[in-house]
Each structure stands twice: as structure tokens, then as C-alpha cells.
Length: 183
Ligand code: 5GP
Ligand code: MG
Ligand code: MG
Image (cartoon, rainbow, N blue to C red; front, side, top):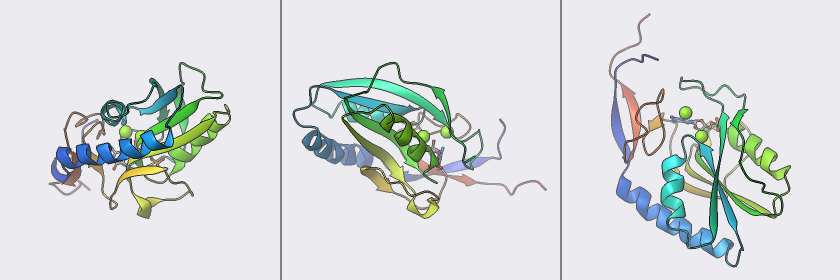
């Protein structure tokens, strides 16, 4: 999809992300100490870089699975409608589960997916989001762990896209349009 010209201003450096992930991993290891298996569920596609870095800091018996939900089209506004595009490969009943999300914005996606996973009766379900935009929340939901709270800006990088681009940026940046929208 063609978009207006934009530049990306750095918001969170790769170094800050790495340091924060080390802290979060310490807390997660403490929480799940002694587990026989932790199923780390990444929400595709935005969490793929985060989950890769996070599991490598988790010195626990980890399995990785993925779920794809969609609330955004290729624009920058939530559709408030959550669809499951790809379900987990494995069973999570009776398991310890960590759900990994890139951004909590309105909260619709996280709330919906938590409900779905809870219905499968895991032993323990915890959630982590790299980014949180609390000022945008429309439904009452919060991840158990959050990497960074950010203002209401459209961000990209570190796995997060704008119309499928910029996922490979090593840091988090905010999109700034350089030309006014055509009438
Ligand atoms: P929610 O359902 O909480 O409104 O939206 C959650 C999803 O919307 C996030 O997982 C993410 O995929 C997408 N999203 C929310 N804010 C942004 C943003 O600033 N940039 C991008 N690229 N996606 C976002
Ligand atoms: Mg997401
Ligand atoms: Mg997206």
C-alpha cells in the first residue's frame, strides 16, 4: 500500500531495549522458577524480534509457539475487531504460558487473546508487552510486564511494521510524515 513520505525518529535505542529485556527476563525467571515447561506464545507478526531476544535471556525449559491475530489492516488505526488468522500448533491446557505482544494500544487484541487462551485452561497465563500506550486504552487490560510505556505515537521497528515495512529496524522509532495529506 503506498503511503505518504515519512521519516523515522528514534524513540528507544537497541541498547535500551536489550537492557530492559535483561531486567524483564530476570523477573519472568523468578515468576516461573521450577516450571517443567514454559510455553512462550508470540503474537505474530509484530512480536517476532522481541520473542527471539526474550527467550534467549530465559534460562528456563522453554517451548515457542505462535498465534496470529489481526486488528489492524495496513493503516494506522485499530479496527477494534480481532480475528484469529493462525492458531497455536500445541495444546496449552495445564501448561505455564507466557503470551508475548508487541504493543498494547486500545487493548482489544490483548483482551481477546487472553480470553481465548484462558478458555483452554492453562495452569498459569502471564502476559508481556514490549510497548504500552496507556493513553489509548479503550478496554480494561494490562500486561503483567511492560517494557516501555510510550505516548500516543505510531511506532515502527524491532519487529513492528508500517504497512509491512520497517520491521527490520533494530530500534523503535516513531513515524513522522514529511508532507501534508492530499485533499
Ligand atoms: P490494540 O488491539 O491494543 O488496539 O492493538 C494492538 C495491536 O495494534 C498491536 O499489537 C500492534 O500490532 C498494533 N499497533 C498498535 N499501535 C501500533 C503502532 O504504533 N505501530 C504499529 N505498527 N502497530 C501498532
Ligand atoms: Mg501485535
Ligand atoms: Mg501490524
